[in-house]
Length: 384
Image 1: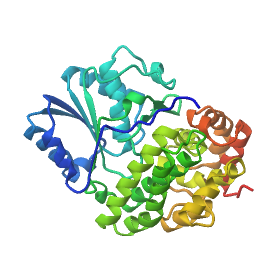
Image 2 (image 1 turned 180 degrees about the vertical axis):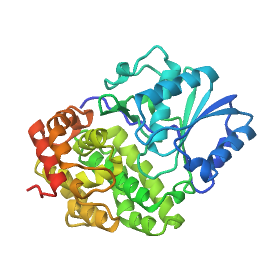
Image 3 (image 1 turned 90 degrees about the vertical axis):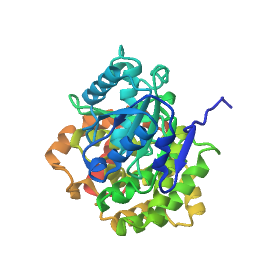
């Protein structure tokens, strides 16, 4: 057996009011990275600045990270950090803000690099020569606060790139359920199904181990039980706490076991159409579970441990409860024009097949397989 690694943040601070941990940090300067206006609107951004000030830390805010953070945004953020010279980078917000902050951190530490230099898996140089990283998620979904992953979009070529580097695992993750309690229902649904997807793909991954499987199964159990509750009642703090913890448990699984075809296809259809990542995962998941089942016994094992009959049907049932469409043709979040879908299908299928997440998918799917799955998920055709 080859030598393997299991990596998680050095510290995970969790529970209500855990944001207070910022006031205990040692340092001089912090760059706070965030997305749109929600963290400002709900007072969390001002609170973070205040807590850092209490610790004697001066801060700047780098905001405006897009829902699909672009290469331009992370390069520009790295330059702003270089002008300020922080010793802490504090990312607060959704997965997009956290993903962007990680790559900004890389360009701050290594300003000579281009984005193309860090696309190959493991090509990123060592970090922490200038700063350490804290991630504070406002959604219970991406688990970027736990992982060695970041997804950045090349807007010129309409391609999402998963950036993978062990050094991007944050030093500290702060899981305060007060932040996701402010999410509207549709974001709760999309991010929650992202947690489910991380869990089931990590469990079925060809790189799964006895270290990763328990985290994946527990995350699946929590999502099945608590996501519909959090969707119906966003202020239910028990459900919010369990979903926030589930997100990070799933992150511990997939950052070490990797993912599979669901993420490969979601990355590329997101790049082409702009559909939200978690929503794309939710729609694609049942089709790919049905496709993968013939190559792996892990789905049957998950069903046994979770006491469900058919994990793909469990996803479909969750999607219905969460008002998520069962196919892309019925998705109204973005314009899934059929003519455009057909015109980009071959390119999108080839790009998805080349995605790093495909490497750990059960079996050896071909580009033709990927195209068939995209067509099934677009039109709602069941895969046998």
